[in-house]
Image 1 (cartoon, rainbow, N blue to C red):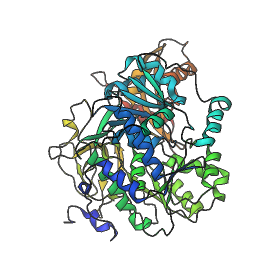
Image 2 (image 1 turned 45 degrees about the horizontal axis):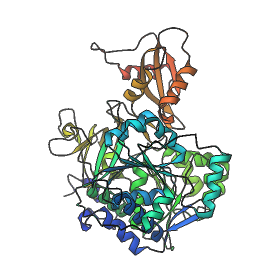
Image 3 (image 1 turned 30 degrees about the vertical axis):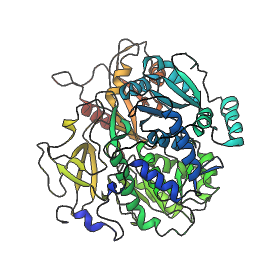
Image 4 (image 1 turned 180 degrees about the vertical axis):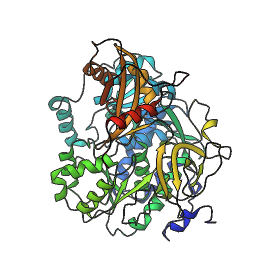
Length: 566
C-alpha cells in the first residue's frame, strides 16, 4: 500500500490514514455537534469581549430565522463582507443553517472587484460592516443585491461596542461616508436582524453532503476571479483532515481551553478551515481585527495564554520585528502553523529561537479548502519542504503529456481527496482535472523517496503577496485604462517583507505620465496588495511571434538588473 504512497509511512501512530466525512449528514450537523458539546466554553475573544459556543449558536439561529423570513429561495447565495469581528462566524453559520450558499468577500475589495464577485455569484443579500459600505454603494445598483444588512464593528460587544464604534467612526475616522438608503435595496441594521430573528420561527433545512456550501473566490488567469464550489462534504472533510493532523500535539495540551490566535482574515480559506477545525475541538479564537497594528496585536497576545498561532510568513516576521514580542510568555505555545505562502528558513530560525516553538509549513489552496500537505506536526526541525499529503489525500506528479514522473523529478502537482472542489461556478472545469479525476493545481513539485514534496515553481504566473494570490492578467487589464499607458506587463519579484511584490513594466505614450500618477490610479482600482510597488518604464515589451508578452523574459531581465545575493 505504501509503495505508491510512501508518505503514509511518515504518519505518527495517532494520525489516521483516512477520514470519513460522511459520519455527518451535512456541515450543519458538525456545527450543531460543536454547540451541544462545548455550549458554555468560550468560542471567541475580541477586544476583551467573550462569546460562548451557546452565544454563537443562538445568534446564528436568529440570523438563519431572519433570512428564511425574507422569502429568498433555498440555495440562493448570500455574501459576507467583514473583518475578524464577533459577528463573522454567527453570520456565516446562520447563512448555512438557513439553507443558503455563503460567498465570503474580501472587505478590502474595490468596487470593481466587488461588483464582479457579486454578479458572478448572483448574491441577493449581503452582510457588510459599515467601514466597507462605500465600496458597496459604488456598485450595488449594478448587482442582484436586494437586501443589505449593515453592521458596525462593535455590534456584538455590548457596552464595550459603543466605545469601539465611537472610536472607529469619530476618532480614527475609519468609516468613509456612504449612502445605502435607495428604495431598491432594503437596508437592515445587524442588531435588528438579531432582535427580529429571535422571535421568528426557524426551520431546519434538509441538506445533502454534495450540495454547495461555500463559493470561495480565487484569482483567475483570465483576469477575473473564479468561484471554487466547495460542497458540504468538501468543508467537513477539510476540518476532519486538519483536526486529525494536529491531534499528536493537541491531545497532549492539558488545559481547560485551547486558545487559537485568529489573525488571518476569516474570509480567507486558510482561516475559515481553521475555524472549523477549532470548533470541532472546542477551541477559543482570539480574534485580531487588525493584525497590521503590531503593537496592538502583541498587547492582545499578552492578555491570555495562546497555544496555536497560524499565520503567513509575513505575519510571523512582523511579530518578530516588533520589539515587545520577545517579552511575551510562550510557555503555552505548541503549534505555529505556516501557510498561505512559502515560509523562509531565516524567519523559521528566528521564530524557534524567540518562542521555542518550531514553525510547521504546509501547502493548501482554495480549491481544496486549504487542506493538502503538511509537515509532521511533531517535527522540530524546519526542512524547507511542504510536507506530505494529509489523511485521505492522494497526490500524483505528472509531466506535460500527463504521464507520471519518478521520484525527485519535477512535474505538475495533481490532487484528489474528499476536500477537493468539483470545479468552478458558472464555468466549464473539465480541463482543470486529469482524465482520472485529479485536480490540476498548476504548481510544479517533486517528491522524494519518503513521500515529502518540495514546491519548485508555479506553472501559472501567479504572484503570492503576503499569502494572497495576485494574477498579472487582472492587474494589466485594469492598468491599461490608466491615461498615459500604452502597454504594460506584470511580474512578481522577491520581497523580504511580503514574499513577493508586484512589479509592472510600462510602455508610456509620452514623457508626461508619472509613476506617482500610475500608483494613484492603481490604488483607486485595485486592492492594496495587488497594486504595483515597483514600476519601470520601457520602450517595448518582449513578446512572442503571436503577440503574447513573455513574462519569463521580464523575470530574467529583473534578475540580471537586480542579482540576488548568494
